[in-house]
Length: 572
Image (cartoon, rainbow, N blue to C red; front, side, top):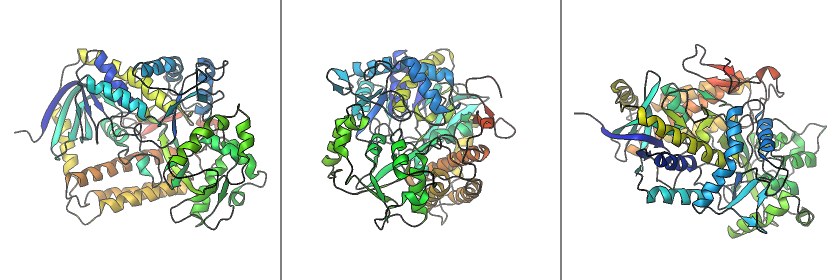
């Protein structure tokens, strides 16, 4: 008898967020038999569902707020922010299909905010034009609309299915192996697989993501032989951590809020070069939320993280911030500023949660957000492992060293649709296969967790997150990254003998293993990129270097484990 159950399908979608839902519907429209595996609950889990801001931003270059905006201007903004790290082919697709992706969402009832019969749009991170269309309640409207449609169509979605690995043989993906809600293995034979598992921000102690975003797609794809690119580029930035967790919108820096340490003393000036002033740095920060080595705004995060590392942080791991004494009325009077358009929504949202930004003090810190790298994909979302597709944060190429705010949600829709269609087309001509050797390897991988030792899996996860916060989040260096690599090797050994009394305990260990694998890839890419570029900042090499104007591609098939190349080109 087999020691696993079996499911057969044309297209397997792993994940349940915005990219997954769009891929599900696109594959179904092509006539494919679609099966969905979700680690938690379908339509109620993943990064798209998890609200960390008062509004969601969705980029469309339709000229709604600036008639001079168009796809070519949008394209230049993306490439400028990417700093040679994006795939121009994928960027072209994004800018030309953004508007139709918004129309698709509207057809299913997603409402984008309007002002005087025009879309309400603001200038988001790294953009030259106001093109970020506004969604109230972050991205839950997308989840609600597309999720309801998937359910209406009767597309089977299996909750509490932890996918352990991909069934790959001879460079082809044939499905996946998962643990069901009882812990029993389930083999899913699929002619095409779409990976939409999001990022890996749970690698860090401070992050803006839900607990189920643990780098599963990156780690599984790497083990199966797929190539990944740009893993050193990860968005981190300032977030509220008390009285609640929320992304701190970049437009709010226009008011020059007050930053003080645990004792109420201003600290930024202590960490600035003599040539810079605090107002200069804060004003530059208004351009973008994510930390970037590309301009002087980097000293906001550098000063916050340095103050915390120097023992000046609060007991909750942050610093204090308030708007008291800021000239907000002057900013509100200038309707050309994003602050004037967004402050009423922001202030109201905070007030509903018991915080008055005019007078209350909140705590902020540096938090991990989205990873700009991932599985290397082509124009249809297919990876270097044939039969495996990827979309959303799991995929690399549409973004680079920095990413425009408002691009990720739109990218999920554009490439979710493309991956879904292409996966369905591939499934029409592919036979169903059950690769016994790959199944046996994954069953052995599960058995490798002894589950009866004295190690505490929770402690290992916490130590991993603290190590990542210190050496991989904002401040990186050769010594720090090398130390991190050594530390996680020891932690990974401990996982194999950690105690696991239940199915959920075992899932937690596998997730931590995935985070370690992802952290190892990020650290390796960060070490080899001996420069600072965009979201990758090296204290020991603080300037960019033209000789590194190519992406680092991680490859198990390369003798050195990876190579530098320009994405979209045929060079190596």
